Image 1 (cartoon, rainbow, N blue to C red):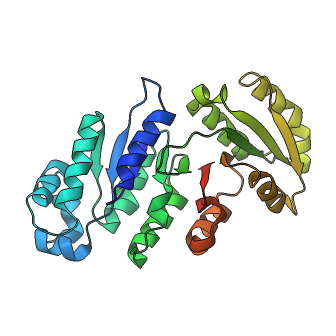
Image 2 (image 1 turned 135 degrees about the horizontal axis):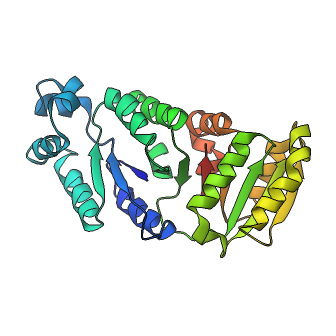
Length: 274
């Protein structure tokens, strides 16, 4: 699993939260540092910051930063590497837009999950390049994305969104595989968008869920109004994880372009999406 890190104390909390949620001994985590060092800092540390990932190994990059005196580098990178070492996590570093666009997206193909703390989307000092890089990563990640609070808060409600498509079923299958230990202690709700295909497949999805969770609730919504119906359901809960293979682009646009008022950035709300 990839854990997306940035130059804030929230990153340490994200590590601890992730280890609590994904508590299987066989899980393997990789901490990915992508922000906190501006291009102007990089120019002072490296002769050619555009291609540093091609010219230096990751350990060499870390050593150069740690021995620099630039603001917003030494203190946090030290904390980042120490925390990862303490938790026995591998460390990967992406310091420019090109390496995020290509290296990190390609690495996601070989991971089960990309975990992103919500604080990374709410920084007051984020610039255009940073925002575009995060948006690109959300849209193009080749593994499921889990957006969740950085703080440790127990989740009690899991809402599975199903519209009859293979992608919506794949999201549910992947989530159940990754979160299996959580199911026993959570309330599970299947929200079916009543398309013609969903009505044909609804019995099959019920039978599949019963192999993992004997008791779960069922809600239904019409395709034309399902998103409003879904939000009316979700606001009843103090906390939840929404599992969706249906509306990833809609959610990402809400996160990026409606940042100050995004429904999913409020409170203890999490989204698992493919």
